[in-house]
Image (cartoon, rainbow, N blue to C red; front, side, top):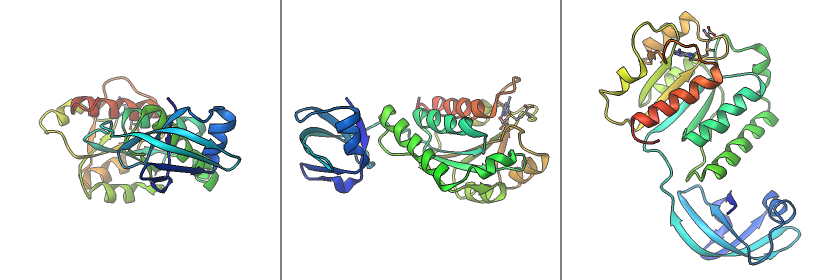
Length: 245
Ligand code: SAM
């Protein structure tokens, strides 16, 4: 059944009133008809099974036939500080990270980000990224939409991460400490911050600064993962270790 995130005000008691692009999607793309059912997600951990009643040019009306609480969010709120990547690679991280259970994404302006990728922070590009997250969250049946935060410089990100949770920076130069060495002794953390570098990796200065802010360098093993792989592997491993996957 098709799932859509909608603003909470679209659902009042048992009545549903939808406007905007979702109307086009329901009527023209999915060609749904009155009597068909969809699931509406209100971004507050509830899902509503809705029977379509009328489908007009600009509005869709429906009635809620069932409402339930979604239990699909990980206990650990994982924030992925992802070094900005070229083009589709960053979009891939947003989509797959949403499916895995990442709670928030922070585009990270690290020293070795490729110049072109910095230009990609246009409003249109951010809007596209948000759409990718919504579509991935609908497909995955997430209970709440992952947040796309504003881009941050490395030091800003370290300051933000210091506000709470276990902070990790996978670094291929880390000689001994593996991800599991850090996770095993810790009971499941409520918050986890994960720093992943761009294609060129982190500089030594960034790793030193991260240490000063209590961000722990960890190895993801002897093989060098692409930037768009590393964040997903590390996020999945962390959520798995803490029973969220
Ligand atoms: N220095 C890398 C190289 O030689 O290709 C470039 C960095 S790698 C493509 C991108 C990011 O993925 C790194 O900054 C790091 O965060 C993470 N990463 C990749 N492989 C890793 C590993 N084996 N251990 C820890 N982090 C890794």
